[in-house]
Length: 86
Image 1 (cartoon, helix red, strand yellow):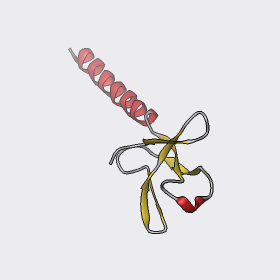
Image 2: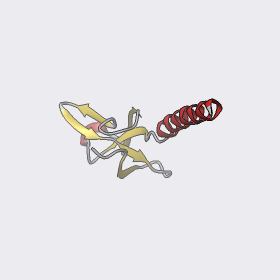
Image 3: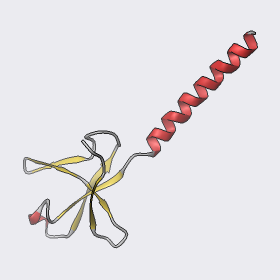
């Protein structure tokens, strides 16, 4: 009976650790702004930094304006898709 409890405890712990790694792996990645968001940036797509994932973590404040960061498309342009929804 004790062996069964220990096994269940170890399994629950392993699942918790695996869940933490799986959640971390879903982080959105790098964030960009485009000319529509920041007309003065001069480039169609500018790298603004990495996002940690989760709600409201993929935003940047530029000149007092908070912007939602975008994904980078394979052709080098900024997507209209935001990295995370608020």
